[in-house]
Image 1 (cartoon, rainbow, N blue to C red):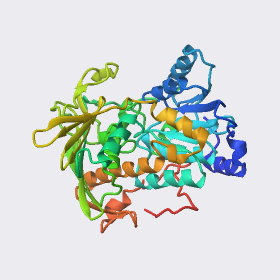
Image 2: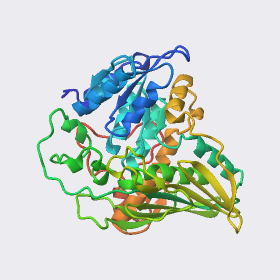
Image 3: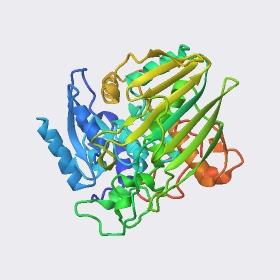
Image 4: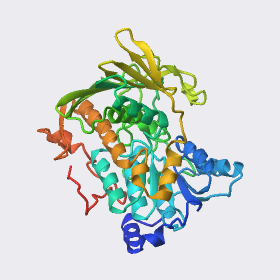
Length: 451
């Protein structure tokens, strides 16, 4: 494990000119050298996507699990590409001045700090959803991109079909939109209970823990099942739900909710899961004097299909392969409703709910290609999923979970960045403590309201 600590890293990186820390691309045809970080699950898509983009090299791979790292190297080499450099410690990746961008698919609780470190080192960053682990981090990740003038792309909201749907809603295809729903009905079996055990060979567990409290190793605190533990994850509202919350909010054209209420629980199973497997969150927005409503739902087992969105899960989805799921959005307007799922969007108009216009755009090149385009052009306005929009959507995840955990309605004030009259809820905007040296800093020199 590296002896480089965060204090040394920050001092050394800031001391060097940005030009020394990240290569300036001379032309659109220059190769963009990307390091993919964390790929036991979602990160595999990062690797495969970059391998398909012209003039992009997967130059480095980083993972704390040596067995996962070996699989990533094999994927690159089997594609006929040059063997990438490999690292266990993300900070060592950032010392390589030839790396232009880092692509983060690490667990939620690493996203913000690794993005900040990447920006400080002069790298552009693609960061998976949710881009922050808590409310405080949602501020800092945007502040870092602005202070260091880096391109930071959020891992949700870049699909062509969603942007087409947003435009059609704005044009009034279903009239005056007053409500949206996000649906996350996924078949998720019990995770059971696991015992403490020695850290597996080849795993840099201290690096994996990062900013979280140090606890003994168990299988339910590691690969994937960390999603269901409060120290590391945000439940399914933050996992799958980040996509649907972002779509619902952004397509309605609203930003910060004023009133948030969430309830639910962990039903049916007796296991190690801490986060709810069934949850309903309601958000109220004030939009130009008009109230708008957003309702988000998590269901974990047998459920109905809605609005034709339901389908079978990915045949490669492990234990849940081929299970029924309903994952998508519904917007309600004065003239009808619009529903979106993997197949795109469809509309149903009038009292008879007659089929109306539907998707024209395909999936498109997606967020990875758009990220590379903007890394080259430096035109932030061309980003399909710019980090500020992702951070606003992530706040909905955190406010819903705080409401669930304290058991009451919250009244959010975006100006003071606090919950009105609720010191307990506001205190949950950040960790009680970050584990040194993995402390998420408050970014100085930008407009940054304290939580």
